[in-house]
Image 1 (cartoon, rainbow, N blue to C red):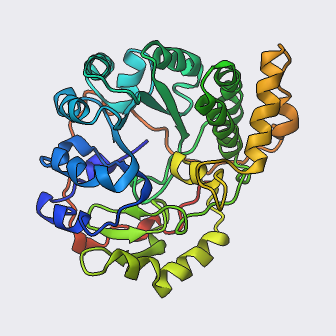
Image 2: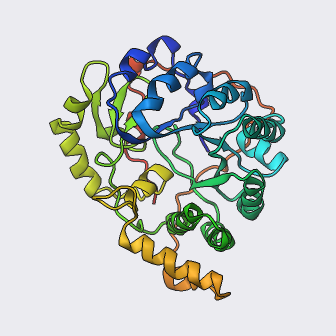
Length: 360
């Protein structure tokens, strides 16, 4: 579902500490993602630099290098760690192509809990191969007092993917219903709003329009491995600047940024990822509180599950409106297969082939 690992960057070209130092303070949220952040030899220095610049710092990781993550958590217990986990046992290993991946991730989680981590969890991408295990994954996460981040298959230039299409959209979407109910039963308000995000994932999986319009380029941006800034991590035509040669303010106030925001307002890609969905449900003027629409949904449906009433999903999602995906070859597991990645450089401009890839 993601081929970043097949196109690694050259370490000498990757965004430097000096460039990252140009980022201003006062961010609400920064996510160190990849590829795999723990492959950076200077990851701890990156965290030292960025931790004071944001209210919340997250590392999205495969969780296979627990020693590096443990050292960070020992120093910064409130750094948010989300370990990619796509299934229970061999199911995870098959989807992610990881030998003994499930056991190694569990071992990392236990190390981080013991180190005092206070914002830990697993991250799961809904797809045909794991939709029957969503509740199991949620309960596994809860057993570590953790939180479950969720997404669905997306195409885009960051992932080097054009074939991330569900095979049975209706089956996957329906499988999310019990997870939403379980999250609403939780005592954690954050889980209640994750339930709303998962409602949006049901619509995205079916190929229906977003619950709330995207705010890419205004409320969030993406910094690629070469320091180029994009409005989002899906459309390569939304590049707005380069942090190696420009200041943050120059980029965000540039004509290119304004043009990208105009394109976002007309965008039909139908993405619904954590970054683009979480920012969209926040109040335009007070980022720490939600918009009225998701707040009302949460209050109403939290009351429903509290009093033992059924959530009427059929009134919220049109299950007869299912997009017909393009015919794509079936995705195969890379577990046990030999593959030699090809390094890509900044000068290659490799993203053009993904301009017209849609996420309907």
